[in-house]
Length: 89
Image (tube, rainbow, N blue to C red; front, top):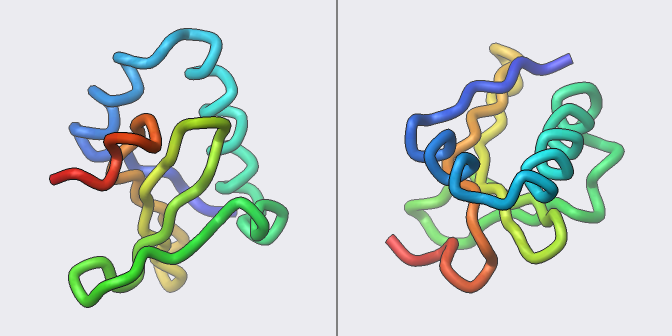
């Protein structure tokens, strides 16, 4: 089982989302922490040298950008936003 760590920006992103979607996102993150392989169809790696080791998880129209650190059993949540604006900045 992995431990979830949120960056401050990810916490702010999550607080701005509708409460119904917040619950759905939290459920997906709990699944991701328990066993990332169960969500393998919803997870895609980010492309580019700057994003090495990062991936995104799809939850409806929202995307969760995260980085998995296998050796420490930690998943760092970097950003959570609507798919239309997640890849900016």
